[in-house]
Image (tube, rainbow, N blue to C red; front, side, top):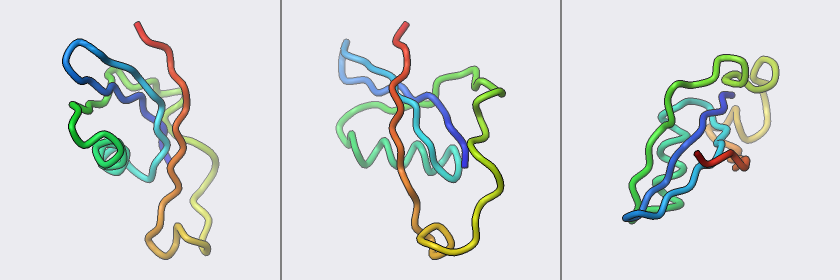
Length: 78
């Protein structure tokens, strides 16, 4: 599980959120589905200290069956 900051834009309006997912690609896809009419991008640089979330991936449950848990975390806007 990883955590990345994402920026969502629509015209001059923008906001940032932290997204936890199995991969960066999955995080982008989650945000594009939540905000289909807006521009979504990963905020770089990615903070190495907070990139990996938790320990090793557990076997069993919805994650082992191809499911995913989405968690949106508030982030600072610059």
